[in-house]
Image (tube, rainbow, N blue to C red; front, top):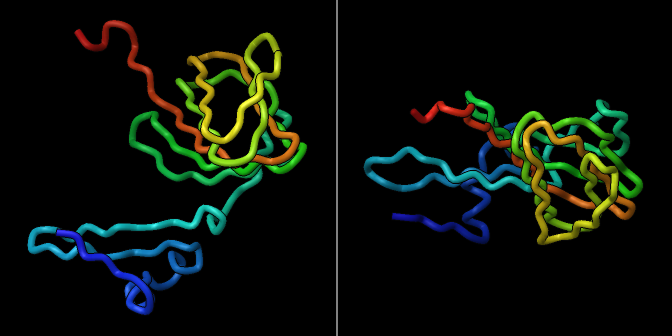
Length: 152
C-alpha cells in the first residue's frame, strides 16, 4: 500500500542532513512488512565532479548507482563547448540524452548529432567521444558483458 504526501505534509517527511541539502527526499512506505524508503533526487542539486581524463573539458558527473559487478549509472552535465575526448569503452554503454543536444563519435571520428529523447549505444572496446556545443544532460549506463560461454 502506498502513502502519498503533498504540500506542507511533505516538509515533515524530508530526510534530515546531507540528503536534504543534496535535494533528496525520503518518503517512508507504510506497510506492516516493509521498511522501504522512496527517495527523490533533484538532479540539479547532486554533487558533481569534473571529468578530467581523456582530454575532457567542461563535463561534470555524479554516480547514481553502481553494483558489486560491472554495471554503473551516471548523470552527466555537459556545459556549452564541452567534450569527453576519444577513449575505448570498458562496457556496453547507453548514452541517453535527457535535455539539450550534443554529438557522439565512434572510431571513425565522425560526429553524429544527438538530442533529448535519443540514445547512443556503444559496444565494449569501441573508441568513442562525446560533446556538446550548447549544453546537454545525460544518463549514462555502463552494462557488464558476460564472457562467451559463461552461460553454459
